[in-house]
Image 1 (tube, rainbow, N blue to C red):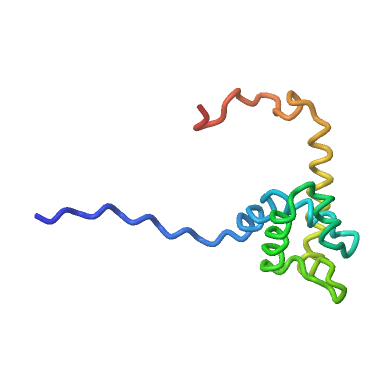
Image 2 (cartoon, rainbow, N blue to C red):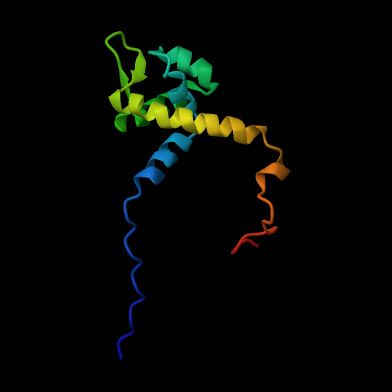
Length: 122
């Protein structure tokens, strides 16, 4: 008798938010993007602002350019593209939320009545 094949995993559906969070969560991406909201910046300035090495900043800027979030202006400086500028509103809202969250003590972050562990935590 032929052996049955194990079932194939279901294809992963596209998850654009997850893709964006993955891109922005890479070391240096979000800080570079955050520093471009005030206008164009030369590469060396972005290296200083991120505190990362040139190769890593170059890689992140390349990824942000490939994603259509950052572009290079006529003077060779990096700036937000139209898509990058549209992303600023949601990021600033998230930044405000993060500021409030950072002000909470660990005890304040856990809602009243919450169990010590959630389902599946263990």
